[in-house]
Length: 217
Image (cartoon, rainbow, N blue to C red; front, side, top):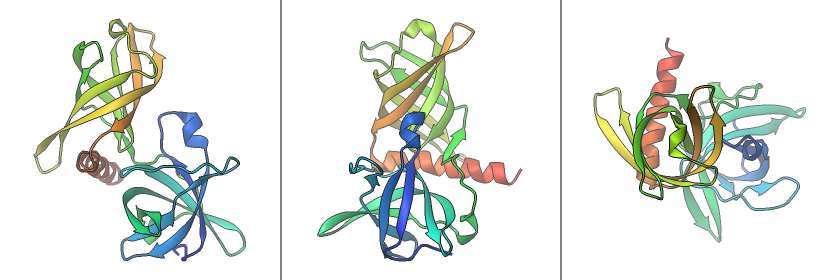
């Protein structure tokens, strides 16, 4: 069962920052397309602030059916449409993936991918990711690199696909959190702040391939 046009939907946006991820936004289904929903720009519950979404943002959504039952699904932003006001296009989930249980795993997968990093002082190093998603990545590195929260990093991610092809995805990211490990290493958690839609879709494609692999093990 899908939400209908004019139904309210409640949204959480995937983020490596738990405080950001806990924020709830309210929107409305504006149109129902073959493979997508068009929704109004989400408004943050409690503050009324508009939430700017970008292509590739991963969303946990629920809507209410008869009797006030919550129906959950995960999706992501695929584009935009303008009809006097901007609307956001999100991928329509498969009917069987709509559940009564909230799944907050989003489209982020554990992945050991090579990533090249350049800091603002031009320090460069290569390391490996802990996880990747359309909205951010995290990686381990030695603490000698002095990465701090809010730093801007320039990254190149190497992505291997199941068909044997390889892509290099460039992006600019912001460090949202640093976690110190017992060894002389840290985990840097990043959100993508500058990436082309085409490059973001490459990461999302990889995540879908990985999720499919996990489900079929």
